Length: 591
Image 1 (cartoon, rainbow, N blue to C red):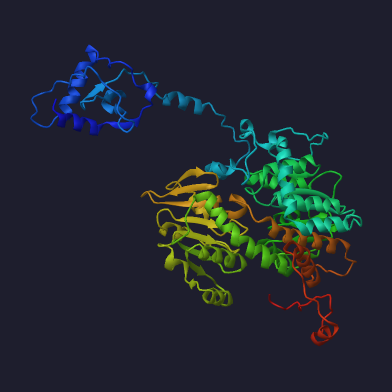
Image 2 (image 1 turned 60 degrees about the vertical axis):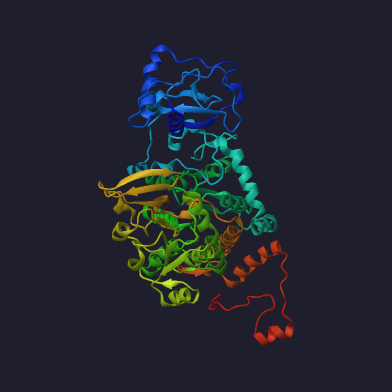
């Protein structure tokens, strides 16, 4: 064989580093007789057209180990992994073969098929995208994989005190959840201060609070604060994907009646709420809601309970909207506190929280790079403002859709281009909804999106993206990872749908604890206010938190920054017509 033939042969094989200990200390073993035809065929295949010498090269009698850069294992794919090394004269000699065990795909498939397929009471809509039900909190997952497929409703669990008045994923995770709660306490100074100042007075003694919020480490700090102030609590989750299982376990271990786990079905969701409310010998007298589902369930199933309920505290846009609808229709039979529109909730939680968590949620689920991406944000309220500011800072090209001319003008003045969704839907890389409305992104827009477009929602409810229209036979759902689904069209186009259109940040990541401290403190003070208010102070209507309480919540967080407020002199206070201790702004003031 000519040198050129050997060179071509060498170019066809794969190069791999071979440790010096793998090189044989003696001359290579010549090929076996039955292997000669295969080697001959290799030479014929490697030789140039018209070559008359198909014979394999004769090994050199004194092969030597080449320098490290040339001491190379050479694998010929046609020889099923046959190996060779280079002689000093440049020829290639075959080394002794090793038998490699082939991967048994058939066996693996059989093993895979042996995995449990029980899905408990999960509904069909949840099983279509199993990724969401199998995911856990942003912290490490501590769930025992052996019981992942077993519905918590089918388990019999007890805490260390023997109580079974709860339904969670796994009580054994309690220690991990307790550590997360302890971390959250460090970033929630106002709640801890409130707990310390008021626990001697027990302003919530006798209060029986039923709650329906996101069950996270931050909520746990709130619940334990309410308990320290004298309240009894029963709790369910307001979102089927946002529960941190280990935190729920810690609460259950601590004696709280918690009914929630990450990845609930729709049926599980309402069952958990019912278990919180419908319990023998326990009647709630306060409601803490996030989204209005708990309030709606009590109105629908147990309307007589409102005879003993003193008030409702609601913290979301969606829930507040429902309360105002009830009030307008004359069906609101107890006072309600609108926490969502309090300054400390709207200007901090909605704006600053979403400014950080939108990036976190998108990065964790898609690993997307934001620089240069075209993004459309539907809605320029406080949530939209936070999302736009974050994306712009990361180098994205941001468009905004808005129905309100005032918010629209704000978007324009902030440097964003105001568009209609149909004008940019074909070209954008990411679509984010945060309007609190329904059918903002409908099937028509989903059909026109570019391949690989990421679609997500930052509003409380899952009504903004018409996900139901995507559950049709011609479209294929493909699980990518936890909370991430490909929806594939017949022509091969696919979009990336996050959290099945539910709240992105709490479903797919976390939110900044410090900001939640502001909201949770506001909720606690609203509960204290409604529970202790003398009869007649609040009628059957929706109220905003008093301005004085808003300012008090803000003041509790200032020491964290070593901030020092300036105090008015008597002359200045008289000039402005204010009390030196506040409130400092009238109720109509727009912050």
